Image (cartoon, rainbow, N blue to C red; front, side):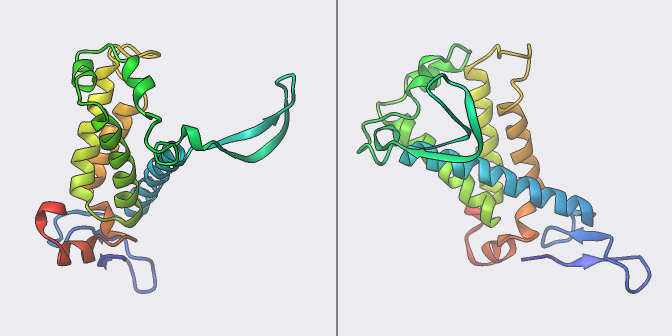
Length: 205
C-alpha cells in the first residue's frame, strides 16, 4: 500500500516527495522511498531464506560439481536433507550450535548460558519474524529495534571480528539498516504498514 505523495513539480510530472508516516513528519524524495522499499524487501528475502534453509534443511548453490569437485554447470541448484532442518529433524538438529560454539566476544556468555533449546527457538522466531515483517511491511518498529539488538548481540558475540578490526560487514550493516527502516516507516510504502498501524495496538507497530 502506497502512502500520500506531494509534488511541487509541474502537472503531469511524477511526485517528488513521499510522506512515509501518518503524521507527515517523515517526508523523503520518491527515489529514496523506492530505495527503502527495495532494501526492506531485500532483507526480507535474506531472513526468509535463512528460515527456510535452517528450518527445513533446504540448501542452495549456484553450481553443480563433479566427483573431482569441479564446477560443471551454473544455475539454481537446490537440495534437501531433513536431518539438517530444525523442524524436519523433529527439533533434534540445532541451527545455532555451531555458531554458539565459536563465539568468543564480550557478549558470548549471553548465548552460551541460554537454557537448552531456547537459543534455537529464539533464533528461528527471529529469522521468520523479521522475514515476514519486512516482506509485508508490518511491525516495522518492532522489527527495526529487534533486528538491531539481535545483530548487535551477534556482532559482540564474535568480537573482534574477522576481516575488519571493528565491524564485521554483515551484522553491523544489517543492524543499522533495520533500525533505519523502522525510523523511516518503510513498511508504509508498497507495504501493509498503514493498515497494520490502524488495526493493531501500538505495542506491535
